[in-house]
Image (cartoon, rainbow, N blue to C red):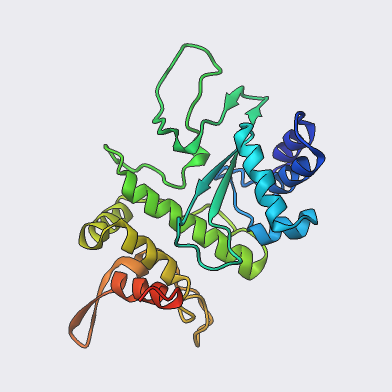
Length: 248
């Protein structure tokens, strides 16, 4: 929870009481490290006492008025009816720094637009997609990884009723190479389905003798040998996703 985010939501004007309540509850889920708010639509509905359709309308209006940004995380790859396919960013100003968070989809890469202190910057906390010597951005790789982070967060929210603890996984150079190789083999849509399928596998999400989760993104993308035969995990988990969603 971010007290600053909740205070910002409480003090906003120009919205209806129902919209303000939705925004306050959304702000209560604000992650100060990632700048994300990832409550499911079901959770927002429960905490606000509003119907899901009402919550959806409120979110749409808040986005149109410029108070939040709604980022589709899974497109049509949502894990289920109870999981929100969206990720939310609050468009608030930080009084102590004068920094305004730019829209996630703006593509802003940093640099000085002016000599003023109040210039828009991409805050370090925005990126669990941390750059480690990456010279050129790869939008497809970053899209897959953003989807993975959103699905991971939704999984924790549904299973434990809270966001995952600690800092989110980083997009390291090794993960970039792995994701790019998978996209090259299969295309981005199938890779995104594989990432979703990872969280649909009971064994991977902890229903195993060890009671341990194996949901790091690498497990959905590598090629493993089974009985000496290479098995592409993208195929395995993408097919699981399609089976669950009757896409065959």
